Image (cartoon, rainbow over all chains, first blue to last red; front, side):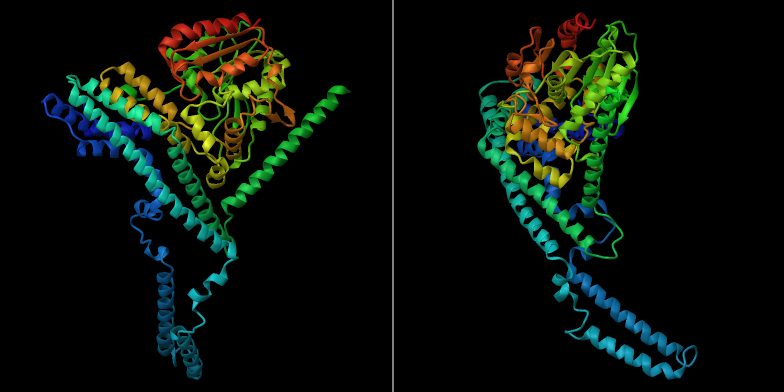
Length: 302
Length: 325
């Protein structure tokens, strides 16, 4: 049985989003299983084909997606805010180039405005002062050794811990990406091995009913994953993936917070500052509660 | 249309009022006629929402307790936020004590029947060992007390570093925990379950039951970061409660003090807390009045299956009623 487009839209409004997604994926899984079953009923021998691959992709998308979005980093922002250009944010060199362009256009603006106003609003005696100002700053902007050469100075602007945090976050991101590739590989290998066992079984026996056919497929896969998920190899890869993902998130956040905390004009408290404040409030709350109990005991003993 | 079958699904048919709150925790009292002296204080796991015990009328354990004229109170651990990240298991145990006091203020009872479910059982056992004089009966449902088991979830919990999770995410979020709970048995929970739903879309009752359950499953609170650290490290990795090394406020939790009547409800096909999670505890406690009821269902099926409601629950309710006056 399939669901119409209108039904699916209505269902999206009513059901939890996870249930909706899993239902949608299972509808697609069912289509592929039905194709395989039809082949089987027609007397054709099954072999591992694209239908099995599609089932795999639908099956594990739900689990892989959050991990892949962590690997893709800023790409998820592009997805969420597709109208914005994140290129500028991603590349420091582009930011500095844009800043230099801005300074040049600002100087041009000053030069042209002063020429326009000279003799009308501004006294002619100011002309030399403006020319000197523009000459000095143009030479600074255009000189390779200009005062505005921030990229060279940049590492000294921030506390060292900020850059160390960035370095460590990149390090953990690389390890996480590597572990995720390994994780995906062992999951896929297990799935394919179980699917091959299932193919062997259905090519040996005959399953007239679709439900029995689909049930045997699920049972082959379930048994293979029961074994895999308890294996030493799997536990090691899962641990490496989780540890490095968590460290990547932590150090990237510390880097971002460090940038903010180093700027005296930053008007925001960071989430780590809030966390520390909440910790102290909770400790105070516990002490007040202890004192209340002591007072109550003393009053009771009078 | 499938959507017509599930529109307006609202769990929790039994009415209650909130009598006390200390955010994010709350204490609820269910409305009903009370005919027994000892009130029941239900203490559900802090990892899910407690209304699974009152999902809908046909499978509501709360309704059965109320129909038996028991006074029913329930602790709601709420949805911890960033502000609650530094809560500790000790705070949860202390809140149970506060609730026992509040129930006493309202009813005049100096003891309660403490009813723990899943991780709420672990908290209840800890509380009963620290304050045995305040617990008339102890009921524990699918209780993880012995964490030294070989099920997938336990193996995973022993192989992770919870401090890294808490440091990165602050709290162990509901989405994070849900992924783990589905991934322990991915084929049955992600394919098998939904393929069965697709096989029975014409059956209104099956569709409704399915979505009642899915609403509950995906309504997942975060676990406060420091509680998550303790839960994984002290319970799963060091098995401190079972081994008599768990302390609360400097006091050691001693299972030898669990001498009150004890009812254990376990499920043979429970992949989260298999029967071996409770058997060593059941054997170790010195209570002279102890009983175990074993269902052939899984962790949640014990609560919401119609067969459990026909076989297990009448006996469990009778056991409590007989010890409530």
